[in-house]
Image (tube, rainbow, N blue to C red; front, side):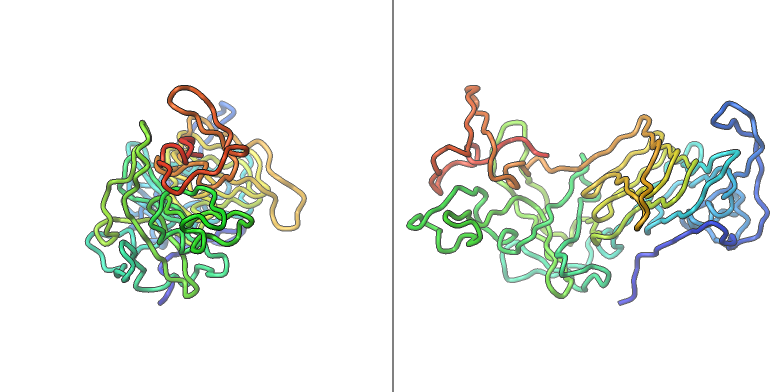
Length: 373
C-alpha cells in the first residue's frame, strides 16, 4: 500500500513551486516598525502552482513558507492540513515568517493515518477472536515493528483523550485491572508476567489502547474500565473502533519540525497528534508560539540540537498556549511506577514500597493511585 501520509520539507534556497506574484500588505513588525511584507494564503484544497491570493490559495504549508522565506505572513485558511511539515534553514532578518490561521478562521495541522480518522462506520478494523480486540485490516508501512510503538487518540472525545500504547499484547488482552505483587503459590502466579521475579505482577488491562504486532498491524481494544474512583471517570464509551474516528500515528510522525531556523512565529493554530512528539525544534532561535493549542503525542514540544551539531535552541517563547497531554482519567501513574503512595479517603498515606503484598481480590481503589501523569 502506498504511503497516504505526505511529508513536506522546505530548505533554504529552494524555489517556490508556483508563480512569484503575491499580495503585499502593510504590517507592524515585532520591533514596532511598520514594514511592507508579503502575505500569502494556503488552503487544504488549494494548488501549489496558484498565486497564493485569497481566491487562489496554495495547498501546502511548505509552499507558503517558501513564498515568504525572506519574511512575511502565511495565512492558513480554515481546514485541516494533514501530513508532517518540516521547515529547514529559514532565517529572515527584517521581518519574521509568521504562520497563522487566516483572520476569522481556524486552521489545524495534523499528523495521523487517514484510514482510521475518516467517516464512520469505517472498514479499517476487523474483529479478532479475543473478546473486545480488533486489528487493522492493513499494516502501517512506515511503522517500525521492532520499536513496537504507535500512538493513538480519540478524535471526537472531549476532553482530548489519548489511547494507551501497550508494549505487551498480554496487557492489552488481560482480564484483570489491578496488579498486586504475586509470589509462588498465589492464584495467577504461573500466568503472570515472569520478568519481575522473585515476585511477579499480573498482566493488567489499563484502559483503551493499541499495540503494534510484528507485521505492523495495529491491535486495538476499547473495553470499559472498572476502577470506581471518585472524580476519575472510567471509560464507558464505544467498544467497536469501526464506529469511532481514531487518530493513529507512527512513532516518528511529527506534525511540525523546525530545523536551523530563526525568527519564525506560529500563531492561532491547532497542532495535534503525531508519534513520539508533536513539535520538534532543532537548533533554532527566536521562535514564538502565540495562542497555539497543542493536542500532544508523547511529547508536545521537543527542543534539541540538530544531528551532530553542538548548537541547541535559544529563545523559544510560548505565549498564551495550551499543551494538552490527553492523559485518560482511567490511566494512573501507578500503572507505570512500581513504587507509589496511596492516599486513602480518611487522609492516611500508604507507601507501597514497604506495604505487605495485596491479595488478587483487592479492590481497584486500594491498588491504583489516582494521580495520572
